[in-house]
Image 1 (cartoon, rainbow, N blue to C red):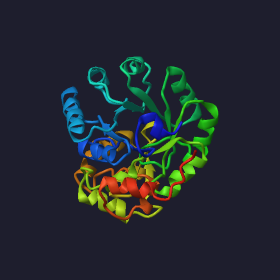
Image 2: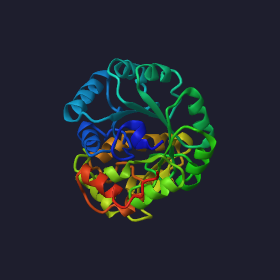
Image 3: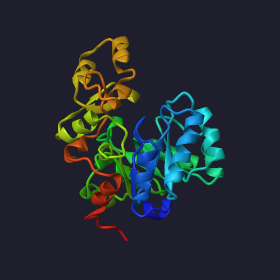
Image 4: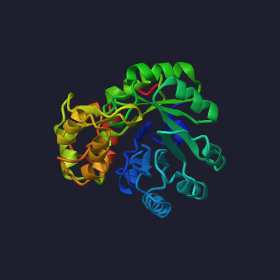
Length: 297
């Protein structure tokens, strides 16, 4: 099944949720353009989540999604909102959604976990996931250890539910490659960092535009591995051996990046940033992504 059929959207393109960034204006613009906009819940309370849901619904009648990053401490407060005001699809990551997945499925919400390896993909399928996003380590933000090229076909071979490819995709060639690997569609995050509707500092967008193929670096260990653009902060993080100092430097660094603090911010972005060279409306980004794609039959 193609992602467009599964989610009732025009193009099989999901706007990857960017923590603290993917707010209502971007989400609604992507959905209006025929993709699937996905709202971040990072930094939201139950009250502000309701406000963001209302803002998306006021701007579009098209399907959209919500992302739950399960390292958040207030997930238990957010789930009742999503049960009471069901959305078409919820994406999960950085944790196990077993405790609330049945409740969301029961109200008609599709649940699609983001997974870093085959073992977790199988686990999510057995929990009742509608589909999975197989995300390679080329992506920005928190990453696993497997590449998109190797991960996607192995997940496709291991589970019968739909598999969405993510990590290093910001061109039509990348979408064609994802289809060739057996994916039903793609998730793209970094491509939308430079959307006109994305609420980040112009300095953040310019760093993405100025990036080359070697402009990102991975800091941290284990579940805290993060891919970001190279900045003075990443240099400090890579040379810091003291865990306490590392935590002090990293805490709040995404918020500082969103505000444009080049020296102290963590400007999360994927390796494909080198292929992105201008600021465009979200709708035009969707159009460009799809131009030249050979849709599987």
